[in-house]
Length: 448
Ligand code: UD1
Ligand code: CA
Image (cartoon, rainbow, N blue to C red):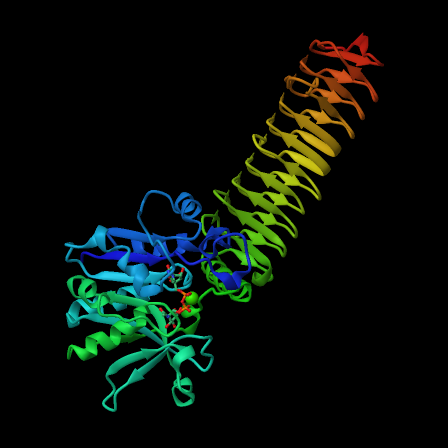
């Protein structure tokens, strides 16, 4: 079915008490407005208009160009915000879904039910309601004696009896579009000086038209974000949803409340995630790994059967059977070959470590290419920066770098070579050569 969507996102969100517009606050790493955009597209919306006002340029930048934008000049209420999209959507006969950018927990299944009800009933509109003992400031649904929806009353305007109504307006609607545009014009200014979209129900009833309602089954879905308490509650809901899906797909978590995974992350079977670990961005993790406690991985690719304890990994590639930690830091461009071992306090940036490299303690490797089975002694440092430029270091396979070696780049060390403890290597070292001292000089040839 054809569908258009209007996402209301022009408010400042005063109750967030923030310099950032409410709809840009991240929820599990993704701005609130992007949840609504992704929902609309999953529900099959062909055209999505985001109504912006406060922080318009910022919102536009975050929300991207998969959607269209309408500007609401003044914050004159939710009905006025919908009206701002009229010039873009008028003439388009598709049903119009209206949702708020502060309702990130709604599901596609619920919105689909809303849209399908509207399509089959064919009346002016269908709205989403929720039954809850905790009204959280939502509008109350007024029904007639025979159960028809005849109005929505905002909390501020409700009488004490109306305040007791436990059926609430969830703030999601599907409209017949030709009806919507003319009905909006009939909405009067509320005592608070705003045009309330909720008053459109009374407009339909006055025209003798029947309003449909769909009741959401899981109250959790209708948690709106008005302040940072709500935002924290929503974090917990999203985390539970994401972690549950991974658990069912074969990932172990000893305490799922303490594992933070963005929705973009992929994880293989039989991987174990231990508490206080966080996986973000484009991270992909293989099978049978043990991650954490206390490991943070962003935008990285991890192979199978890796063991990553209390480490930070950013923009790196880690092949199978790598063991690391505690307290290692892989930075952008680090690539660790199969079976690399990194002990405590290692940092690697823009470097490739060949298979089987061992780097047990306190080392910095930057802009280096290191051959297979090289042993990097405790405290080794690639001195890659001369104050102006970064320079490369190359080390051949099976070479032994002694403890506390300073590798002053640019530098090339051959295969099967050796540096003595405390060497400051300023000149290239040949295959099989042993160097020692400050600055390092050749000692004797190794037997071949
Ligand atoms: C609204 C509903 C209320 C419902 C609740 C559910 C109205 C009048 N009330 O109240 O019945 O129970 O949602 O969450 O609709 N916005 C604009 N321009 C404006 C005003 C608001 O774009 O001039 C946007 C806001 O950015 C927000 C959305 O519309 O994304 C809803 O506005 P908000 O002020 O949060 O309405 P509620 O008080 O939550
Ligand atoms: Ca709200």
